[in-house]
Image (cartoon, rainbow, N blue to C red):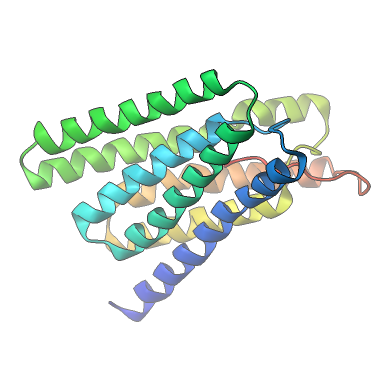
Length: 218
């Protein structure tokens, strides 16, 4: 591996794992309060699907940067999901959503592994799916950003998470560019754009220093 690619690979691993670790704040809160109050479940599920999808793409492509990052990411998200299910008073709802996740994974496995025998075509279609899913995850917080603009308050945003998301998106964009892999490069551009928008919101509407940040999932 070229030195520049090695450097980018290390940056991708470090920044992405740092971003995933922000969920540990929610995990500590769940164990401390023995509840899931003010913690959203859907981001854990969608991030888990995203990690497992990119893990499959990495395995097909034999890209150990993707494999290592998304193995750890999927393990962390699964841990968050299990803790949420344990502490949630609405176990039926979250179990149904978790079963839906499992169903999506089974259908995805059947489609990509059984219905697309050609390895190159399977890699291309899986890469397209991963790209579209990642873009939708990066764009989904725009609704919350619109609320922040209306309320003129950034108390619900996490500045450290915004920095982590920006560095993660930028490193993966450069990594994909270095590999000439559009499936890696393109979906991370929206992450850069939304992070820059958050930086602008922090500059435009500085949070009160006596307020605690509440972490959001990227």
